[in-house]
Length: 261
Image (cartoon, rainbow, N blue to C red; front, side):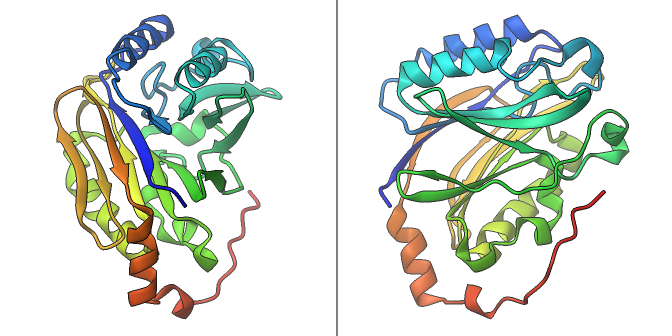
């Protein structure tokens, strides 16, 4: 494992305006002045958290994925975030893990936000995704998944970095700020959680509160209320040192998750 340079975009998302969101992100990325390994964007970064899937969904390999390929190649890094995808006549809140060489992996949001009627539009995923980056094993998740520790459990130390991309409203931000350190400590991994800012098309305010927490619960990065494109480093030795000193993962309970719908 090498240390990783991470760039997070806590962005204002223009409601259901794909072109404007992609233009804004690309403009903000142009201010990066150092090499990065990974760019992390919020949930539904090109539309905002919309249930208008019939109007906004793209096919696999569509406009936004082509844009992600271009950005990943330009900055020679991975770029990730979730978008609305139509695949075999079903809609998914799908995270794309796009590499610089144009290859990619996908994760479909497992826990759909029933309070916002997300489950009435989108199809839940059934599989976790673990991807490798510079010797790190990375587990990307989406927003509401954060509330479900069994799904996020670091079974057999399968990941070193947990990612959460989100559209998490300010009115429940106390939960966000409590759960992220808990996930880092219990799984002995870095957690990076990237949220949006501003009001969405339903006049719901998002305060951001994007953060990075190390395996001991310490804050590496935190930003509230403002749009922010920021690059920081996470340290491989912090993961190794924590697991050597506190070998708690080996004492975890065995369990089975049933994912059939």
